[in-house]
Image 1 (cartoon, rainbow, N blue to C red):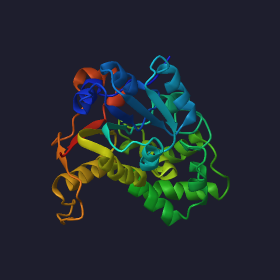
Image 2 (tube, helix red, strand yellow):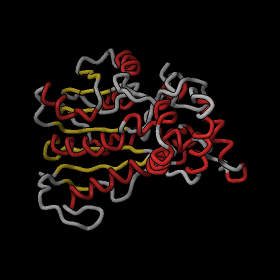
Image 3 (cartoon, rainbow, N blue to C red):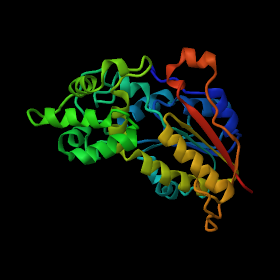
Image 4 (tube, rainbow, N blue to C red):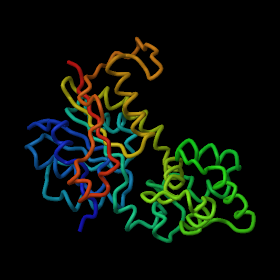
Length: 306
């Protein structure tokens, strides 16, 4: 049983424009939902499936075992350039990023991604990473922790949350998701809780981003991916929070116009793309109702200039 439903499947396939005989890369394979759709869409040449979490990669292998034109890579997508070199890929026709965590991570993993499950504060998608979420909440200086949660979580109540964390850890190390969740609940006045989002959501997001260096990796891989695309090739990115979407929007604008978000020209940008989505595409009401994971998704796509 696979927990994760691919988000915006029809839109993803439409913008990716999957064609027979071509090579594609799914940089965030997860349980293989989008990969399966691509493989069923046309008799493509090859699909490269990249996933940094080996446990979930095994699930993708099970899901896609009937397809013979798949190569599985256990690695972080930040190493896309090196992966392509190892596989002797000079160009590919399409690259997909679905930046959201798989439902498996929230419901089955014991790595601390969800505050609904009582588990250790790990949050590493790759166990080779040194820093765990528990290291951050227990060791970071108060001001550094404030900067991190504000920058990566955009949390309004950052200062009282961090103060509560720092006072608590003087007596006892914070070791579990429930401990941290309860600290945050006590730090945010009940009257300011939002009906649709738990007060711990943005802090947990910030910790996960920091542990896995997600924003830096995204910046880097977008550059490498655009370089790897063949003329007419397409890149599709689905993001789930404003920090990711802002990076994607600004990067695509830079490569389409040679101008950054501040209006500064960058003549050194020689790769060029055509924007396929002037505004982000979002899931329709039917999908949003059936698949809660899709509600915050924003899809952007570009096509490499010829």
